[in-house]
Image (cartoon, rainbow, N blue to C red; front, top):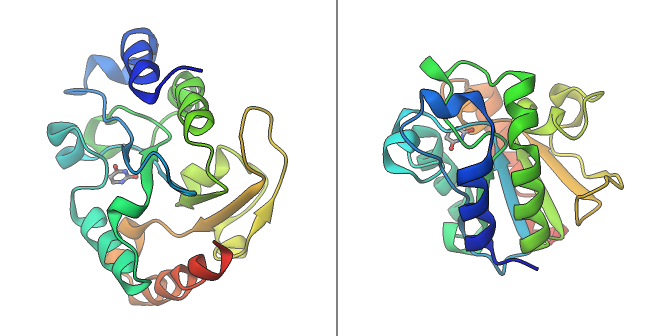
Length: 184
Ligand code: URA
């Protein structure tokens, strides 16, 4: 079994994602590698692309506040993205870009072995549950055996960026966050 550092070193070199051409750098997963809970976002934004760390912009600040609201810190979780390179102008990642980064994400998950995977937003969720709608399943624990994924438990949440300027979604996201501690 390779270490996470070895996995990242391998994939920084071998990932065939076309976004490499326009991104500043790969934004690697970050946080506690001994955690039971992994959060998966969509793709790095501008701040993340420049800083090389996931969720350090406005969405990340809101995420940190929500973690605090359930007495957790960033150091308690591991956080990564479906796509490791910033899409130009923050457009949605294309299916082939998600596919190119998929083996990297699976290797990360197999290294950390979380018991719960939290999807931040519909793009992270649709990678694993293409048939579900985030408006139907947000805050609900999903159970599924997926080849290559070391847990059967998934919690889809709205993306913090979508909820930042939408009071209704914001409250739903805060309420859904409260479900995390009892699940763990
Ligand atoms: N949004 C994401 O989905 N990921 C990041 O790293 C930052 C913002």
